Length: 122
Image (cartoon, rainbow, N blue to C red; front, side, top):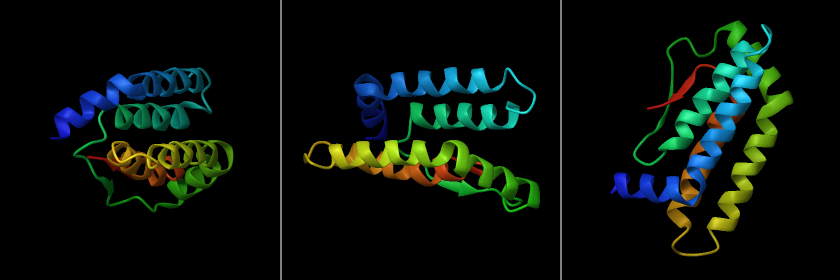
């Protein structure tokens, strides 16, 4: 069932979203300071490619001080915009019965978009 969900997700906009994440991640990687944030953006792109059948997991060393600092910077600079976009799409998709599973996937991506350092979608 997750294969069918992922295929429909890709056709209905998931592929374009993932490509936008990849492009943004590559742009961030052009500077030395932006490399850690670019890698997290690319990780969000990979998570956006196939969110059905995957769960967010916290890595064992997720709350190291440097990752906490990076998460705060991410939250202030990028995370809240991405989270609002996922919440808006979840709200729009939840208006129809067919869109509810896709809305749930957007809601699954919100915590990862808020604090990606030390977390992954597996």
